[in-house]
Length: 98
Image: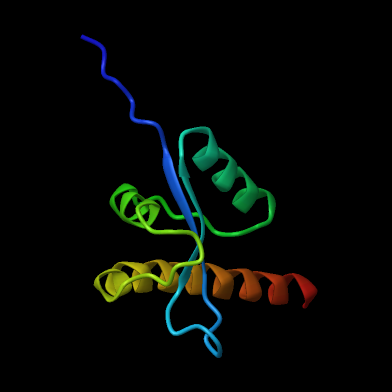
């Protein structure tokens, strides 16, 4: 019996600490749209984190909607991941210039 693969789900978030009360959904989708969201992120050097459950929850929200408080903890973990990646990139960039 062959295993059926679910189409991928993806969501993109943005957060401007000075002007946003919470992160916002800037793109979301499944299937080919999800693949395009992921490809665009990678093409632009935006970190991508795989979390199927969170992606499905974010896909249920409207674009430009702030995430609800129930998702703060999960999204905070993603932001920590991104900040760590960005910190590593800055350290690596600095080492190459030295």
